[in-house]
Length: 429
Image 1: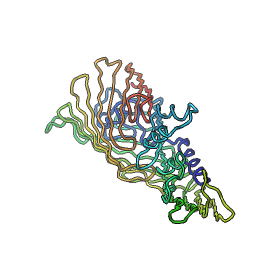
Image 2: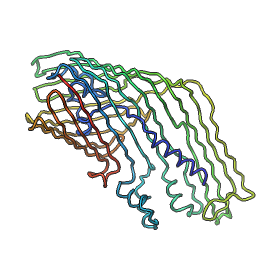
Image 3: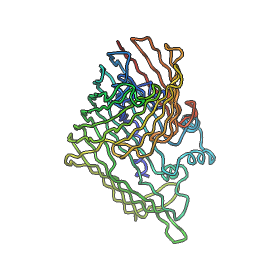
Image 4: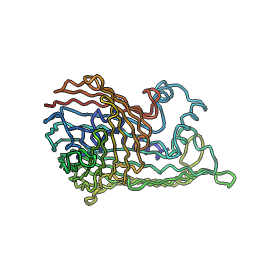
């Protein structure tokens, strides 16, 4: 079917147009499943709680050479399934098809790709400045489309939902200016440190893609109703732009008490948006196909009525709000060499690939060998669902290197539905 092919091509294009992710988080945080927002020092706070800039730090200056985090993830297939069914050239029998289709959840097939980066950043007490990549992207296909591809339209009288596709993505460069103010330092009321902080983001948007409306139904033939033909109604509408400008604002507070506990709250993008002005366009695609004959594939008969339109035209400037997030975090120094962290993250809007699904995370850092700290974490919910994280660092005082790995939906790459790899290297004095 022509419309199915177009939708699949669009889906693949969105997946492989890698856009940077919204929050720039380094490898230490990645290894702890993004649970350490209450325990960051220096440039580790970029993308998290700026108030932690006021916490005690051994080093007075840091320069971030590179932090990068790459993610590829879907909500349906493990790598083992992908290798088994899609790379061997094997013929798919009914059992194989059912295994594939049963792996797709009711919400449909979704894919996420991102590449996060932070470089040319420096820290001084209570202040940091960094150049970062900002953005997000996802794409989702309705569950009925893969079923049609594998099994055909075998169920008479059924209405197949083929048009409920969703997705958006954006990318940009940002200058992040963060500062913190120590409200209280001392031992009064058990509190050792209370601070507030803010981050201002100046954003240069590189591009945006947003599905505005998508709907489509295949009305299958039904011989019991003397209807021997199928009908397709499909409409897809999206808007794009190639450049824009915007800003964002984060606010955070942190408190440390009884020397071992630290708690923090952060409002990410409490306000902010990007106004897209570079070649803004709207894209409309619609197909109405009536009286399609049914065989092994759809066939246009002489009596078929097919209306196919594919139109793009310029539109006025438009704005998209940055995804708002509330983040609550805590850390506990259980032993001199064992740190335990926890975090609750609640998205408040879905704009620009945001999510309102809450996320819970726990993490730990074991540093009895200070030169080689080991980290792990578990995250539930959020954009990527269940994930297990592992990592380690090389700490040579004035130079550090951190590596991290996250598996989504499984422990090992073969059983997972996606992975993240992160790397950070930084100088500090």
